[in-house]
Picture 1 (cartoon, rainbow, N blue to C red):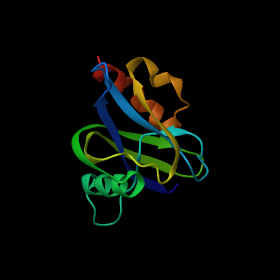
Picture 2: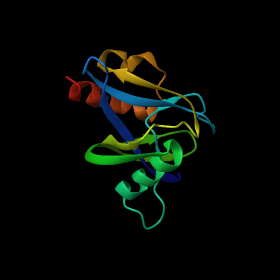
Picture 3: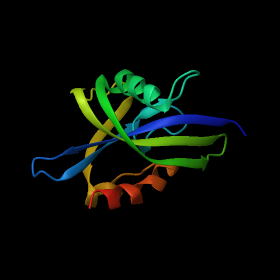
Length: 134
């Protein structure tokens, strides 16, 4: 089975009540279209995960991010490929999160994380995020 290496940004901010929120996007293309995920994409040859993540977020959301700590590397078998996804805490440096490839996006608080239909690989990350937001 083919392995695809990707990176994902768990972009954290605060809402108007100064509570932590996480940015989630709804996939706008491909066989997983419509599922919710953390933005990011494939690591290209010669790129570090961090460099790939900065490039992908700029391409997908027209936003510059600061990359923090690695949360986890998720390994997941989809029917046609194996996904290896490095997930990092991120914060916005500059930009307005313009949706170029996604259908929709939401800022989710700790109690709203289950309100969207996450893609299977991303589901594995939700519990770690919920704990970190406490």
